[in-house]
Each structure stands twice: as C-alpha cells, then as structure tokens.
Image 1 (cartoon, helix red, strand yellow):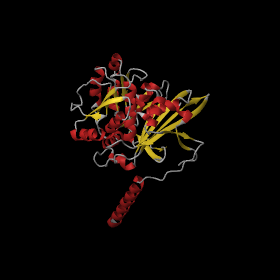
Image 2 (tube, chains in turn blue, green):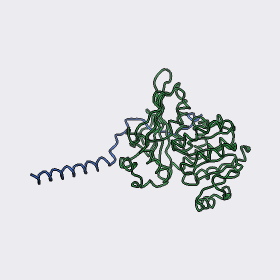
Image 3 (cartoon, each protein chain N blue to C red):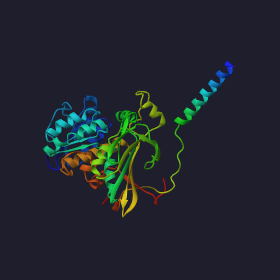
Length: 46
Length: 338
C-alpha cells in the first residue's frame, strides 16, 4: 500500500515537472488574420 | 541658452544609452561641444577616444555644474532627480532617459522650479517611454477624441535596463482607469501583442512602468492608459528572484507598439503605431533629438513633462527618421504580415 502511494506521488511529481516545463516554453502564436505594418512616410509625416 | 547653431551639451552617464546620445549629439551640425561624464573613467575614455574631437571629457564630477545649453541624464536609475534639480535650478534645460516610475514622479515634482526658471525638463526620453509618447500623440492626431492608450514594449537598452525591467515585472503596475490611478500586480494581465516585424508576436505582462504617468496629462479626457512589457514566463519567476536570470545581450532588437483608441466622425476607431530598433540606439536618438529641441527653445512649454507634452511629434519623428529610427503604422487592410 505504502509502495503504491509512493509510486503515485512520484508519478504526480513527474507529471507536474513535465507540465511546468511545457508551460514555461514559449507557446505557439496564432497567425495574424490580416493587415500588416508599413513604414510611416509621405503624407503620414506631415 | 546658446544660439541654435552652437549648442553645448553635457551627457551624464555613458552606458549603452548615454554613449549613443553622445554619438547622436556629436553628429548634429548644430552642436559644437559635447562633454561626457561618468564615474567610470575607463568608460568615458573609450567614448571620447571613439568620438573625438566632437566629444570630450572635462574630468569633472557628474554633479558639477558647468555652463551648457542642455544636459542629458543617462546615468543609473536613482541619480536623475537630484542631478536634474541642480541643473534646472541653474536655468539649464534637462533631458532624462529614466524609465523608473519613482524617479519619474520625483522629476515631475520639479515642474514648478523648471517653470519658474523658464526651462524644459523632458522626462522619460527613451524608447518607451519616449518614442512611445511621441507616437501616441501622432496616432491621436488621426482621431477626434482619444479614449484609451495602450503601450507595449519588447527588449532592453542594456544590462542595467534589462535588470530594471525584470524588477518592474515583479513590482506593481500603474494604470489609469476611469479617472483614477489603479495598481495591478506586475506579471499579471498576459496579452499577446503583435510588434512591428521582425519582432512579431510576444506575450506581454503588466509591469511598473511610468508611461501612464507621462501620457495622462497630455490627453485630456482619456479613460484608460496601460503599459505592458514583453517577457517569457521564466522571467516572471526570476523577476522576484534577482540574480537568477541573465540579462539579455546589449544590442538585441526590441520594439514598441502604441495602440490609441477613440472616436473619429462619430464612430469608434483604433490607430496602432510602433517601431523596431535596438532599444539603446533608438533611445539615444530620441534623447538627443529631445535635447536639441530644448536647447533650441523649441519645446511647447517650460516645466517638467513627458515628450507627449513638451515636443512637436512631427518634428521629432522627422528628425528620428533622418537618423535612421523609422516608425510604422499597422494597416488592418494593407500589406500582410511580413
């Protein structure tokens, strides 16, 4: 019984560690649906 | 104050940003003399050697007063307020590059002295705050009424700036909401922000930055002003544990994004502007352009304030473009993401 409990605790610890690493990693970012940046120039600078 | 074609400037602090300020001033045709000061003698010698004869050292202490047309304070956080008080009391315009909220408050408190002496005290003249303030005013010119301003920044000017940003993530952010100041925990409020290319998307979080303090006085009736800083999740942990996180290398690219929401022609509208550059390079150019404006008597008023209040945004943006700092506007229907 004690062995089972210890195993469960180890499994939970490993799962938490893996989840923590995954969470700390930069998540994927969704693409912009449209539009974009363009340099300020011409009439926008007057 | 000297004539606009014979400006004598003093730059206090020649770290990542201060050295760029000196270089930008030395390359300006209206500047005849740039004195650099820093407690680190070797650093001063390196700057003077690479920029002589336009830039020189007078060997004086950073706090010693000298006859000048403008002073740029680019030293460590915590040194600006006392130095600015001395220069302003002597009737000399001052530009401070600080992005520390407490120090910004101390500098803004010098407003009565600066006004009574008829000199400008430009506070937060860097990448953000600084260029972000100028872009906010320029974006607002497309609107009939400004309701909200949201500033985000990515990247740091140098090791000291990076350490300060980490500390800001661990402190409480200052937002302006419905006519009052609101404190929120730093590191909260995650938001995916799209910066100008090639920085692109980054998760940004609340941090103790002075942008709202500097922008609110410039926009009467604005309801919300917020600031966010790009950070990795690991940095949110190390922000509260100084020394665990290695600051980013000097010279890494950064970006700012300024979103201004309001009303135009009776309809809601949003204008988004930004810039991508190495933060120390851009901050150096912004501080130098601000210094030249103050030394030439081109500030909109005397006293202490952010660039949004003190400077003409178009003149600043035009001068910055000439110096290679280019800004961008987000066009929701135009070119696709690069």
